[in-house]
Length: 253
Image (cartoon, rainbow, N blue to C red; front, side, top):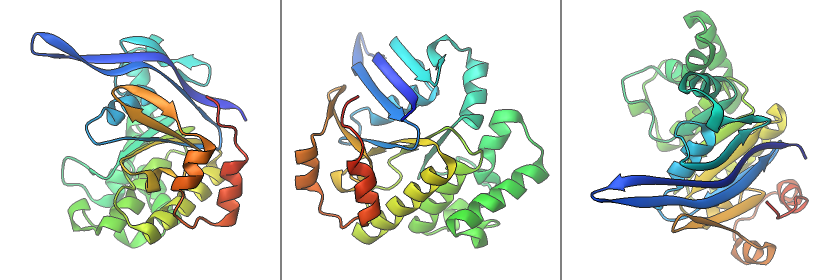
């Protein structure tokens, strides 16, 4: 499979008082086209920082961050911002920080990427909402949506620009077995349709197991889960075609 995104020996830290807090320590991973990769770990461990570095929202202190043959560490802030709306989409269950109708929120990546007009943005946002089955939410506001509707609206936002890479932060946590399976099936169908890749974070292993490859994240470092460990933890009854797709991928990075 074609390599889509990769982090090579990435480190990231923040100033804390008189010292520095090391959040990422020599982190390396890759996402191939058509693949879902999950990073699982406790909340506040730094998974969100890892995803923000991978998507270009934040800069790495050291290492390389690649999107195809483009090294994001060598891009300007403006170039990374444009990529974030066009080539890469970021989504979570946090929603917008201001009051927006759903179709305007879903369409934000289009505005960030190439500054498309409002009519085009709402038209494409409506198509994305229809694709995930929540077109009736278009004129509602985020705070009026159910938890499950928020997940689907966030997925619509992730696909609205037909990106190469979807970055999904803790979106599917705590859904329960049935909803996790539904979300996994939806995400897999979107990846197959768009030919993109997904880098997602999760706080529980059951959610992470929708991915082809699962990395455990702790104390700023990544460890790839073995096939045996995943099999022992796989308590969700995934569809056979999704299971076969996962098992056909190699476990190396």
